[in-house]
Image (tube, rainbow, N blue to C red):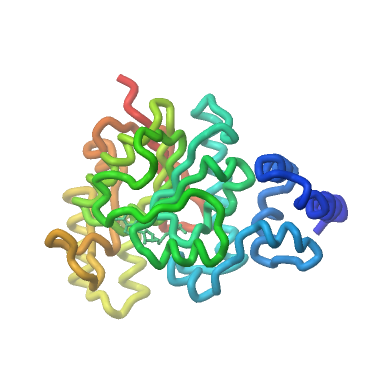
Length: 293
Ligand SMILES: C[S@@+](CC[C@H](N)C(=O)[O-])C[C@H]1O[C@@H](n2cnc3c(N)ncnc32)[C@H](O)[C@@H]1O
């Protein structure tokens, strides 16, 4: 770490007991995102006050089971996504992130919420997830923010009534939902999006299925061909996991979605940008906003 950055962190660490949360978060503006994420992974003992304030990381096993990767390798992917989405937000929305309400839909163990502390006051950060284990891990790591248990079929959100979000992110969530739940979740998120707000989500491209065929002995080439065919015909393919049914269907599995499907089926929303990152090649990042006409 550069000496000047170490000095910034040392000074910040001295100030932690003297500052309220808002003042402390304001100081994070001077800490580069990579460093801000890096100290959360490494937890250097010399910055003990900061380490007490920042959430702990869950074990590598937990990180991997939610996101397929852990620690610095995962941090690279998280930083890439946060950089792209915060950048796009500033490009498209005329409201500082420091005054925006943010929702992480399907927040898992709070991988991305903890990086948002650099930009958004924790009182404006909301996270929902229907899996109680996700929230239990958030709490055990001392993740700050407003966290709620949501429904697997999210016709409503458990966040305060009438609260609209300027920025909603859903990373690796629509890569897993059935078509019925996808449509319901999109409608619900649209209803909670402010008029100028941005909804960013990740989707799997068609190529994901070929990757699965090469990686996983559990999938036959017939099954993969069927999913590829579904994707070609409908722009949407879903392979449910072996899980309990909810309202008669498994809601969670692996999903690919085409941009054309989004254009035709995500009523009232339009695509405001598409991004892709070399750190996570089998996901596309899609920015949506309310349709303008
Ligand atoms: C692959 S993890 C991604 C977690 C987090 N977004 C991240 O990127 O670290 C998928 C998350 O979606 C959540 N999830 C599952 N079904 C959901 C639903 N119907 N609505 C919202 N989230 C859901 C899971 O509990 C899990 O935490």
